[in-house]
Length: 246
Image 1 (tube, rainbow, N blue to C red):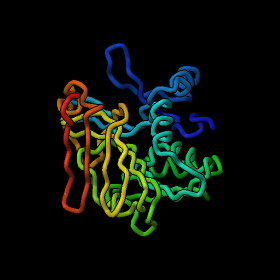
Image 2: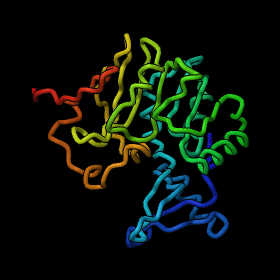
Image 3: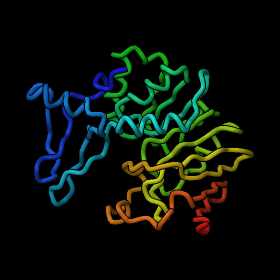
Image 4: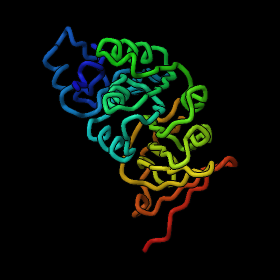
């Protein structure tokens, strides 16, 4: 499957000063293709802050991160999957191509419309259900799910995701809490409780309702935090610990 089929014609790239600037496919198709074919993240939507600085608000993830998240999800054909953050629609199409029944939720109407069009164009519209809404609420009308895969970072894991996951199901989510910023976390669900650990790095933009300052998102971790990180999510909240060093 070609990721370029899901990338909009206008993307944003860094100039020599490190600032984001737009790149339109029609203006420089070769440069556009180089960025899209690189396998690195591709910024597809930006926001201009009060100081005039552009910040990414939606992107196509790096391909190695996409592969890592799908690997640890351990998808099997026939599984029902909730994806939080449709983005370009590429991840959802990959999961559908692997035989999963996918529901993807996108909070922003513009990327949702673009993802819907891409899924239609590539023949996946009948295998992926796209909902425009707040992914922190999940998709209760389509639950339960065997897997929940989140393409935005969370400092607080919404219990709605746990409630909507079957026993022996799994949640895969980038974590942005101060204990272990930028960790890819896998939580296994049983009896309404999700218990998890960090399995690698995953730096994503935060969920829209869980924004944090860049100073927090770029903070240094404690030594060996990835290996020591543990999290438990229940109906009463979440408990995060760093196990003592061995």
